[in-house]
Image 1 (spheres, helix red, strand yellow):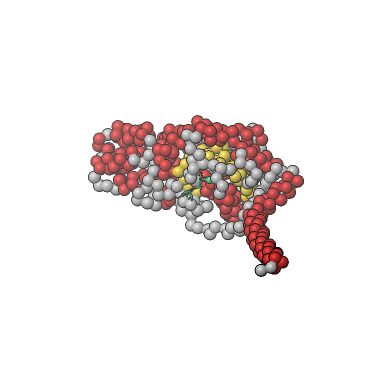
Image 2 (tube, rainbow, N blue to C red; image 1 turned 90 degrees about the horizontal axis):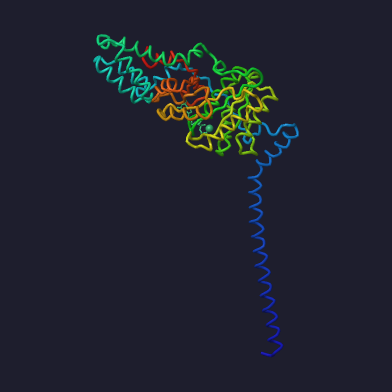
Length: 402
Ligand SMILES: Nc1nc2c(ncn2[C@@H]2O[C@H](COP(=O)(O)OP(=O)(O)OP(=O)(O)O)[C@@H](O)[C@H]2O)c(=O)[nH]1
Ligand SMILES: [Mg+2]
């Protein structure tokens, strides 16, 4: 091969090499560009709701409010079907295994001595707390003569008397009430503020939905504040319940709004702004949901104390009610939770949930006896209508089958 030939070949090879490099480079560049575009598109898709919220927030700020009614999902919720209302008694004696069912069954035994033994066992295993059990058993054993002890109806009467004696001093004021509003200590002026607390999963958010529904049906304007800034899904869950509650309100009457700021994780800020908004916009009620926490978590209990304090800066008497939501199934533990929360927050009432079919429904007696806090409401199911005013006579009669 001549030298010029060799040079030509070298140039050609170099040119081909460069061409291949350019082609590879172009392909690689287009792949990178495509990937980048895909990433940006999906990021944009994810960002869209936030931007919508931001726009909403901006317009709210322009209106002079820090943030209000920020809705992430607007799913229309159908009004719940009207169902047949069941009484407390019907709900409580639903199962044989319930506290009520067991006591009734014990009384149906024809062997009278066995009745007393059974009652004793049921009381001890129903989480009333030993103090309350002793009180009840003392009455059964000592106040009745041995002759009467054989008489089943006098045993029932003695128990009825003692149970009523425990409940009446605390509950009597609520006995004649027919509406949920009557269970709530009303603000002298401005909105009445309810703060709802309790351990995780007790039924706080569900109960708020049920309470709001009853208030809305009564024509009240209710602001529900999403003070559970801890759990990511909490806001959406509350939104679902407030939508349901709104759907139960008579058209043109009750009004339900959710206050769900997304730009803060501080529950005190939510509480403060919610009360301020409710005051400025003439709401009748503010109901504050809070994140579940254990009574043993000192810093989280301190956080609740702060939440309570800041609301008083807007309305001196707020919150007008501080209710603990307790799961009846947690028995003795419910007593412990109530004690600790009461010490930290000075509770004004109890919402006792999951009373439907619990074996530990006796806890209501123990709570009132040992804490001297009224039971305001009981939850008897998962539906929006499954909330009843607690009536102590109906409760005692249900226990004893009277
Ligand atoms: N059977 C029955 N279930 C109930 C009742 N009240 C609430 N629940 C159920 O209890 C579960 C927990 O309810 P939530 O309202 O989420 O409880 P929470 O206290 O807000 O929970 P956190 O926010 O996680 O602390 C849900 O599955 C509810 O349906 C009731 O009275 N009876
Ligand atoms: Mg909740």
